[in-house]
Image 1 (cartoon, one colour):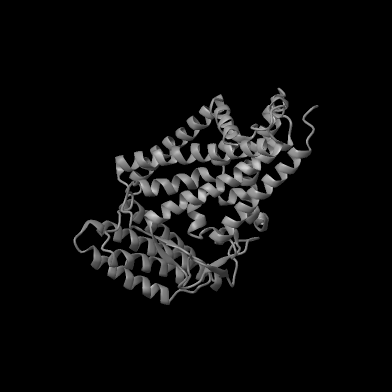
Image 2 (cartoon, rainbow, N blue to C red):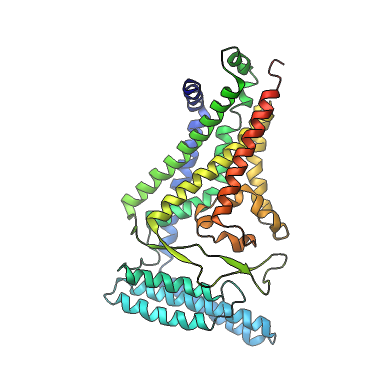
Length: 394
């Protein structure tokens, strides 16, 4: 069995498309790193504060011009949210000063007042929205960690942004290029017939191809991301591994829906907890392995069913693109949790910030893991059944 897997690895890694996928992914990482650095330089606290103040003035004028009380309440929520952002940016400006703990304590007092007055009608006006910032600031104080300044570049923020960007569409496409013809590509020319003349069973042959596809996808994506992460860390710093990340937030349905055709959720007060950044990064990579497993299994199934490698490749590349489009149509929100591309952003899944976008309370990290593993197993079982019955002598 190990010999079969080794043989499949050699065949896969010597194909031109293997080198192409590595180059594409490396180019995407380099492009995002360049954009991240450029964008961060534009995100200075002063520039953002001025932009938020202008937005507050504009919304305040809109609020004064309407007599609809519900509309006024929603606009006031937006104003409160922007004022909170302004306070956090002012806090960021003071991060380098010696009295940064005093600044944090003052911010906590302001946030507690806003939390106590929160309406809990929308996510931005919920008590937990302010509570997240309170427990984050308290974590900084308790662990004697100076908050990073807004606009700072670090390997931590780069990695989370990178996976969010490439997870939903680019990673599935890269896997499709790598995997989509691993079986169908051996129907024509009929090398599959030659392989089956040897003393090996169909089950072992298919399993060896499946494992080599999965492991190759793991290697290409994770190694390139890790190299990018290390390079960014060496240049700009890795960031404090104890930096706080908010996770575990649970949600309930909101009393009112602010988006037409969509279900709105609000976070449950006190449900959020803090996780250190180093642990969060490890979980990001582990969850991404599960996501890669699911993607590879889907495209492997198509490669097994279809005899034409060009057709299996085309369909495999189109599927994530179509799913991404479907995931942007508000009236199709009910199917979003069942599109595998929905779970491409590991950070969003693990922080449970995916639930309010999907409009379902069950879209937790545990559900995401079970869903993706189930997809992977089901796809392989179907591939196994199809391959056993397929007539390879034609």
